[in-house]
Image 1 (cartoon, rainbow, N blue to C red):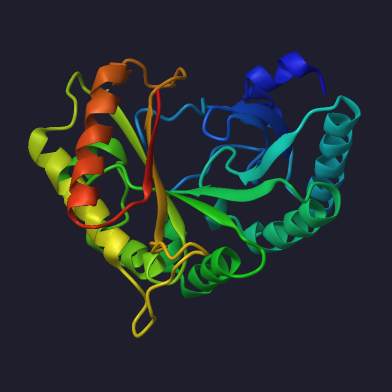
Image 2 (cartoon, helix red, strand yellow):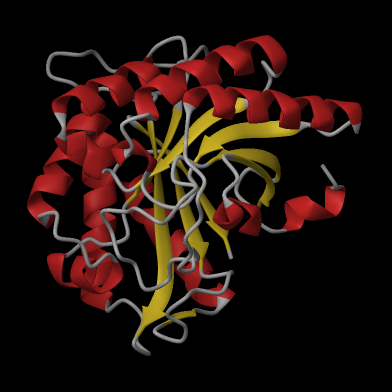
Length: 289
């Protein structure tokens, strides 16, 4: 692995199953796992998506993923690089792959043995939560000893903006209900893309609806479950933290989606922090322009 190669992520579109990349949100080296090395597969069709159209003859196999992950971790160690996380992302929605559960177990075992300080992360749009088996897999992995960090997309507080941002056939209400269920059973990181679509930013009504939804999710606990507290007595919410991030990479549909100023992201973050504090909630709110 060349150190310079982690500044971009295009090797995943060349058929790589494992690709090292610098992650702005992990603030360091991330080992990406790509379950779709042949072509993009996703249940969303976001106009800001950075995955360009491509097609290769590569095929995913859990055995080859293991081999490539061990190679990349070995090379990182040889160069004295710290691996911040092993992350399921790649060319689409990882949870819709038939290999996801197997690959997650294998990656967890490799992480525990070869890079125990690294987080295990899945970046997901949440549509896999509508399938009972996958819901259980993600919930148990996040709440159990695997310690999976679920970075869950929540771009919209209204159905209208969901249609603009995510353009999915998955019903908005069904998806929100599944997200509510997960927030009641496992810790989750909410990730929200803030950008213009067709020259327009989210409306004030959309921003207010999104804040209300985040507050609601932050309050949810599983039925009958007592409030969890950390070692210092602070309440642990189902929502671990919130990532507000901007459009920082080129997209195939540019300029259908465009970046918003950093000041906009920071204003939205401050507004969210206030409504969370007013509600007696304290998940961290971070901005990644």
